Image 1: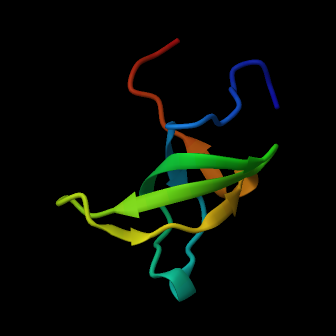
Image 2: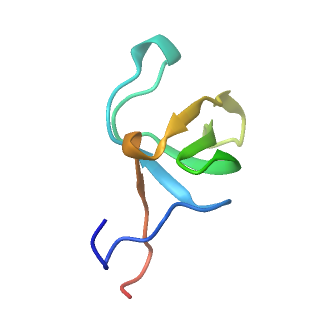
Image 3: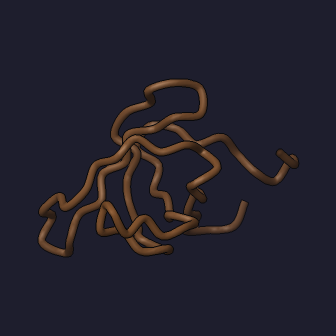
Length: 72
């Protein structure tokens, strides 16, 4: 990890970096970390625009990219 990257934490908004068709998730799907299960494993909630959850898989940090809304 370079010094511009930060670790993923609880309630971070993340993007899926690869498709997971078996879960109905496309690459680029936006989700929220709702639980930290292990050092690099996170429970991520994916919800539609009405707030209805459609997937909540446990994902590795390598499958996610943290979303930033403003520069550092």
